[in-house]
Image (spheres, rainbow, N blue to C red):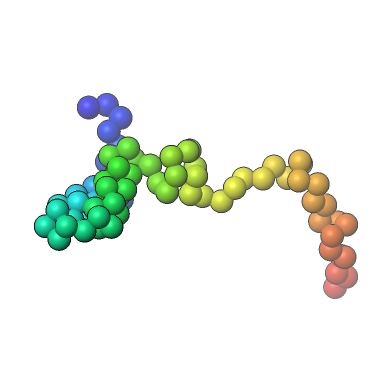
Amino acid sequence: MKGLNLSFTRILRIVIGGFFVFAAFGEKSWAMGLMGSVLLIQGILNRGCGLGADSCGPTKVNKDISGFDPDKAFRKLKI
């Protein structure tokens, strides 16, 4: 299978999600089933907290567009 890319976190999400889904049937707990299904879907689709690309990481700001000028913001220290 080309492009399967099984990593440790993906396998861990699938295993823990499957455990919570099956445990939810035994305990008859909707909350546990919901949490398990979210983890299971994340593991199967290989996505993080969101469904967009790089949704869990910090936002990337282009320094040219941000308008931040360190020369104006900080005074230069003379040592």
